Image 1 (tube, helix red, strand yellow):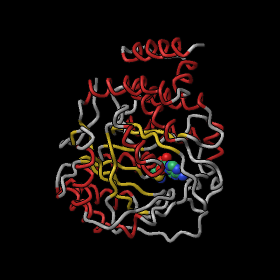
Image 2 (cartoon, rainbow, N blue to C red; image 1 turned 30 degrees about the vertical axis):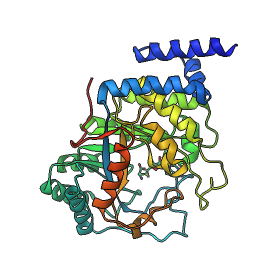
Image 3 (tube, rainbow, N blue to C red; image 1 turned 90 degrees about the vertical axis):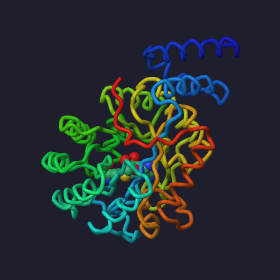
Length: 352
Ligand code: SAH
């Protein structure tokens, strides 16, 4: 196939997707395999869809990683219970609320509470944390605390949690079950269904570059997000952690993540799509590019730096220690210098 023919084909395909066409599996694989030049058309298309929905606005979400204790055994994650080399921490109720209060003072309207699978925090403790934060201001509260009972999810929703983040990690059931010896793909989907039923705004997502994953399987990941009709979708690279069974595997390709985010924007349209932290860790420029190819959200860690070092999902730098307000200001300046506008509202789910 000649280069000219290729380019015409990419343009036609992308412009019909901008108009709402649902591509075939082969077409999705073709888009995910584009080189840098070919991918520009894909990124432009995704950017167009994003700007029609959100204009130049990006949302900053603050994330409080409040516990690194985890009973899970995810083969890729440094927090897995089997990693005995890691010093673990738990933030006290009071400490979480104070961190949230400082963030609210710095302008955050959307807070994520994330942890390993840590049963030490029962539903009443978490419920109190949510109620106390809501008492300061009606910011959006997102939970990312993994698999829990239906009763827990129901209680926490009633306590005021607005959203829940639970990535499906991979839509390849066989791969999922191998990577998660303590759970199953079926259970993960069951949780996602329950969360939707309870009226949470639901975020899911997956990793790109998991060992054994193919382009076709990534296309299926995007289709699963469509089927789940998610409000948010986090798509990030797999980053090997040396103290895990996958420590010697190669990292996910940041450029492939970029193309996947663009494909997701074209196919899913309305969900909030972060330029993920993991993407920034591997390649800061690719993370910035993601804003020009469909992403409209960025997450900023809020917990004290001594904890950030220990929230060791994958290897990363933690940077120099500054206040929550200073870090937010710096992030805002960086986003604005890219021609983006920082949203001042909660950034609830968009219904189109
Ligand atoms: N325990 C919660 C939160 C998990 S940590 C839950 O089960 O939902 C949040 C996310 O970090 C995970 O969903 C996973 O997608 C990501 N993650 C974990 N280890 C990773 C790694 N090595 N590389 C990239 N992402 C990773």
